[in-house]
Image (cartoon, rainbow, N blue to C red; front, side):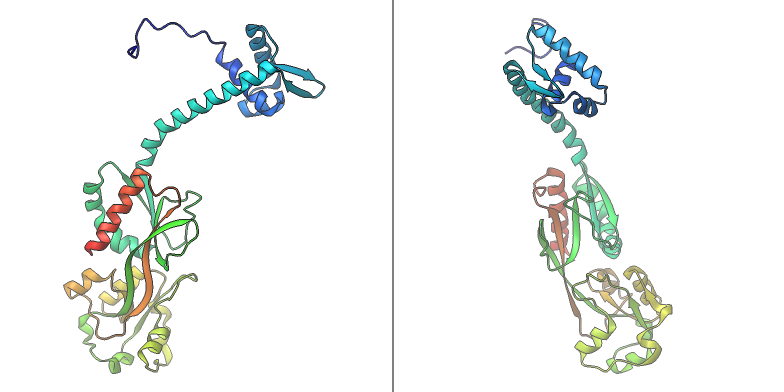
Length: 308
């Protein structure tokens, strides 16, 4: 086998590459005008380069009719060979670009899950996947994975999303949580305390809101300011949790996202019931699940969910 860079390799006998590119584009469009637009040159430049190529080959490649180009038999043969060759070159260049690009993975999830579950695990992720740059997109608006707005998502719901490959991570439940300084222990004492509200997105499967909690608890809801207080209504669950930690009232919070505060005793669950709001799922666009960097992030998140 000849070694790369060997000085004994004979020189390639090729016409100018510009002429070959101009001819391939003109043959694909059967138009000098459209070929010029594709290559960002003038139609006269395309015509000149094709004519120079025909002179170099010693035979015509097009029949030039009025407002029409027609490939000659020689032009057909050359076009087929060039198209295959340029396709191979393009694929080879793409393979070189893809590994570097694929090491950056954008993970999208809602703001509360990003803050309470993903960010505390980032140091562990860097140790587990040192070659992958994880870019975190936190927001409550769903992004289009199929369009490439993000590479992988953690979403809540039933996991039935067309065009996506999914895996259930964990069930999610919400329950009343508060600071132990409130001394709340009985449901009967709940009307004495301020309820903390948190907004849910319109597409939420089964939002954990106070009217639903009272229905499932079989308790008549309190009337007046406790059921709706603008001062203690938040658009972000993390802020609702901070209000509960500060002793400002009782909030319906995720038992998953508040696990650390519950374990430390900073928050307590004085009573039930806990509301089922569905599950968290991993999701990726079909056809991308086996990309190495995405597969590494997927496996790491799944392992973290199992570990709890």
